[in-house]
Length: 508
Image (cartoon, rainbow, N blue to C red; front, side, top):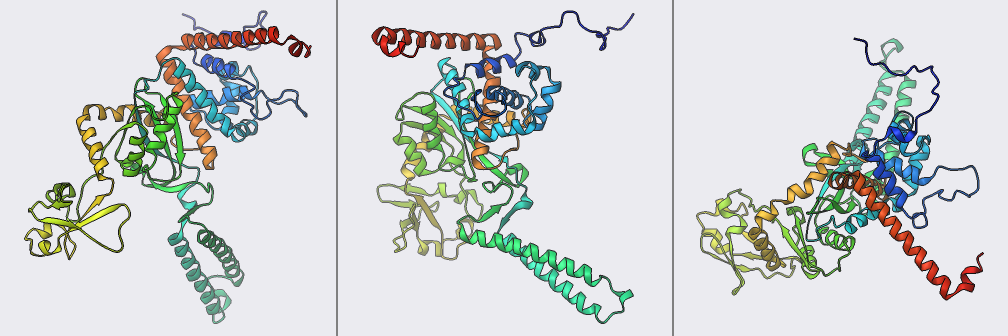
């Protein structure tokens, strides 16, 4: 049997095919096209968005936005890959109608429209909110470390700088000694020539000036480290991968359809202090009042009394795991939770029945009270199981411990609900890192990284909504919304024309 063969490349087509025929009606690129088309051009004033501006014509910024959305949905995030896709990817050719912006133009669009890219993410979520895809009852908040565009080699702290300066000094002394020894040796026995040594010493002096500059920069700032490629990035523990130069990405995910409501990026490695801000941003995005009740789940990284107190004051019902208990000896029988607090007498009772009184000190610790009974510890036969401190055991009580106890009890009573947290909030991180190739940032600087984060999670949300509603249904809803807005504008114009005809007819 003969093979199925394609068309002859050298044969002219009498009736050329439509470009639209290459993309079927259920293709996700049609959602990207419909969504971008629905954006108000007056509200989204992207750079070079005025077609009548001076100079040579520019590309429609909406086409560049379409290109980026497609790229982030299909692991084509770099501007060079996107440029190549405009020539070889039939979906991209259809989406931006066979135009071919160069990689510099593509990269400039992302760099010059940081704030508007954040707004585009919000705009899509407003659509999801109108379509009732958010449950508005339960959200989960979590953070993950995503690698910055800055290697560990180009990250410096005081110890690293001191170590490098010490090495330079030692190496310089070594070369100078070699230079002195050469004076006593015949030319044929010399290991290095004088010219070679001179060049090496000059190189070391340049490196020394570089490290001295970093040292001076550290002294002038409150930071304890400097990243030379991306100044905003910081060294963080990435758990599985160890220490890396990262950003800390925060998200809030709604429980109903696992859609990401809001995102934020910080260069602080800890999650503490972010829970209330994320909860309030979630309420704002969902159109709720700041005091409206909202259940929020988070892991032990968010366990901070002040932040949880703000949540309670704002009506946010929190479910947060407490920090792991421990002691210096590692014996679980003497962990701090085994010391029972007597609220009436403001004392702690140790596992051996001894009473620990609150310490009175001139130097009061600002966020906690301390309890001790050194005399009882001194004669206790189990002291070596409880503490390694010479004087005895000290129990610290957070000044907001009463609230922490309430949160602990609430979390324990709703453990079935709390166990769903991982399914809700950790799945998006795995998806973007593994299937969307977004385990690292391409942009540099905190604001640029925030814009890229919004592109990443907009692509994630768009893929999820396509799976939930389908391509045709999304397009139908977008077109219905556009028709409604247009008819409303038209009605307002006609109404204004009837009331004040002179004012509106003067324009013609």
